[in-house]
Image (cartoon, one colour):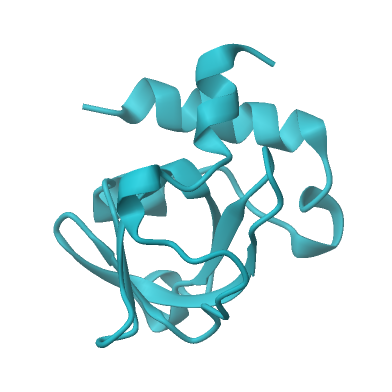
Length: 119
């Protein structure tokens, strides 16, 4: 794994993330609107992520977002902000919770996808 790919899998120091905080149910906001709610998340060093249940917006699709896409956590509003657009999230690689959570090949795919779609 390259250095920049490793950075995708950790919360930014400036995000306000508190290790061990339960983020399930928090709303997730992209740069251009809401994308859903946190279904599952991990704080594991070098492997942190947020799984978002997009609800009816894209037919109940779940997406895995590397923790490095999180720019801010607002504990008062229970919202997470990511530096992605709704289209970037909608077009992200298909996520299957049963097989993809611990799959390094899938994580490489996610790293490449978000690395290519970043502004």
